[in-house]
Image (cartoon, rainbow, N blue to C red):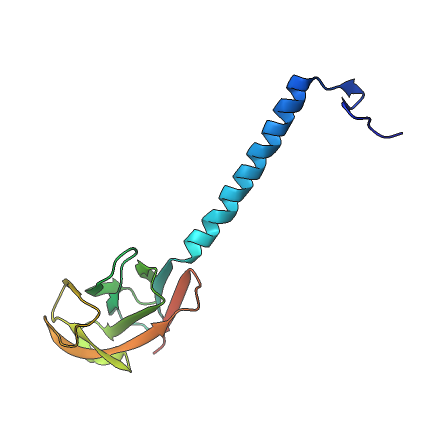
Length: 160
């Protein structure tokens, strides 16, 4: 003997309680849809996290397109303590560039495949267009090109 139409737990459901039940189910489905949409939106943003595995303080320079932007932001120098990890920037562009160097010793650095602009001693913060091929400010230095696979946090480990 199952639950008959219009019965719930041995009680008859009125048309008002049926409507409330339908509304409650629709609200729960709607909340589920909102909850499911939020992580997808968050995944489109990528944060560069630098983990300094050395015993020295390092400084990080970066070149990236800010969320919702179209020009490249060139920024330096973000300090990362020895043994620490810090979030450097957030972007929605899967390609970005960074350079790290030991504080006070620019000959000890991480960066290898592309020249980007830096300013010494810094700090600096300026924008360039996507078609700019020269350093409008500062001087060129070796950066590493990163291509994210879409993870929300891209970790760059700096090993000694």
